Length: 219
Image (cartoon, rainbow, N blue to C red; front, top):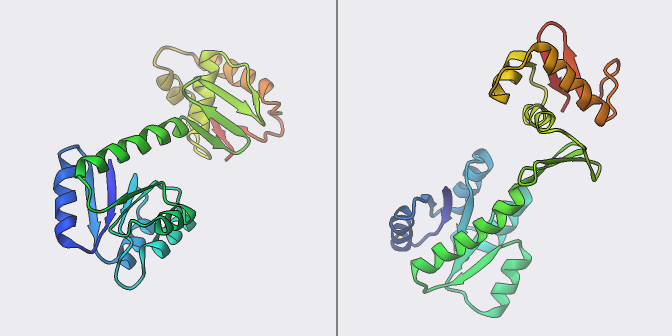
């Protein structure tokens, strides 16, 4: 779990880095908000931002606003400014939580875990074009209609959706399923999926046949 910490107090930086490390969080700390924003723009491997409000050059409210313009990553405000007006403004700018300094580092861990529990439920659903995937329920919906897929059809279609515009060989599909499936069986399952998503194989909108190789989902 990677956390981007934007905090200009170097003592607090080190305290939070050392404490979070004990809970298997990897903290990448910046005291310059401009550099932190550039890092977040170039690197999408962060899971959360912990953000101070009183920063050099630009304040935390503006940083929060800029982060929200490019990402829906969770943001926890960590600030000595604890009045109600600042808290309201932070949430209006898109923060997910607010911790007023001073606080025990353990409380930050509690807030992080609470946000992760909420976001993990949201992550179980994702949308790819017209299709919404609910991995918890093992369902795929097309325009809010749940498709009636068998388990194998679900696994094949999910494999295609997770690899848009990538040619997947019949062999790779069979390996993904984890057991023996002949080319003919794969073709039959693809045909069933096409029928259920109203995809014409002669003029495919979703699943294109790649002659002699396999299939790809048109993303």
